[in-house]
Image 1: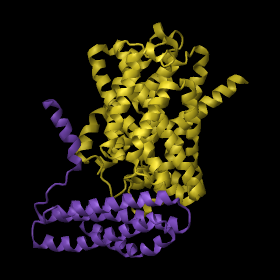
Image 2: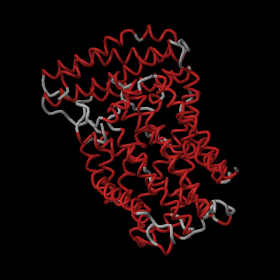
Image 3: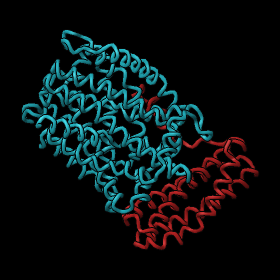
Image 4: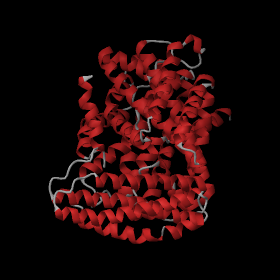
Length: 145
Length: 408
């Protein structure tokens, strides 16, 4: 069993969120978080577009938005769990947290509508995501090393 | 005429049976992140599996012994045991991913959580392996898997063929990615195409179906036509992701995202066909991996293993299969992410390949087994090149996995 421990540790390692001891490291993690959230936001936007055109089956839209909602929540939670090393990092945290929170709640609203079979309303609900996506992209570009 | 029909059916089944969850995940992920710049990784893998599957089919046909039997003979019991443990573990991960994958396709069609489907899928997988004849199983799931051609149709409808070819032939690393990550994903594509279970299943199948010299033509048609066309389906999945997901910055973390390109282009009908095709492809691959687990363990220990004998005459073979399916279903039910399991299984596959392919190359050159059907000089040169490549990949995989945090 002891011989197996390093193997298990190696397998688990990539899933861990490491601490950020100084600002640059924290900013790098914030940039990566923004990039991950942008992917989720764009997934939700793209599905809203497809659904509005009547091209997707209702259960599929529900599943993909449920996945997106869970991803958004996980991304937000993982970022919030990183200790900001100084007041400058606090400011960055506040800036990104606002975007993450808006994205999460909008995707949740989309999931609720999809589960109620209101596919035609998805694009309207998804409207704020366009601006959020642009801001996340700008943020990621500014803070990715 | 009957022979032509048989060869055509086998070849079509080989095309439809080529793609599994590893191919879909690896090609969607790389297409979305690297566009077509890593297409060479998949092509290299397809050439490799064509080369070694043909060899293993020929070896099994002429020696009437499947690959793992020969692995033990040539590597000795100890080294073969290492290979058995590694291959069985990877096979188990793949079986888990395929069963969970079928469950996810049922979720996409019904909206009911995939965890609720896993026990039913596992039961169906086991029952099919228990009751359905090998030849029927292989052909039916292969032919129905042809529904995945919908991915090629979607790419053609985008009219961006020149972009795909230009990007695929222009070897470059996107500026947003570093070299270790680039090569890690190349290994993932390579591993997805060259998974060891394919040769275990293919060679054991040749013995199961009692192939003779006359069937070598079927073997060649399967691998020379069926596998590359199956590989083309994988490339179409990559192309769809490259054309529609990459420009939007969407990375693929779920199977549901892999279906977006076809849905966007072909609508509900296309989505329905794709979900059906994916479900069948994963189900067929679950059968192959489930049987492969039974095959390699039984062949290593010298137990009776053929599916054509009554289960009562091969109890340990069927017990290994049953236990594997139960454990895979239980692992899937722990809510482990099927996409992550798939990623680990294909990358670890790549690391374990030399131990399987080395003995095949040796036996394929032994006139005692092969008579006048030993490898040509060209096959040997290519086979040796791949063996060196596989060894380099086996050494590099784990360090790359750590450096890139598994491609994160």
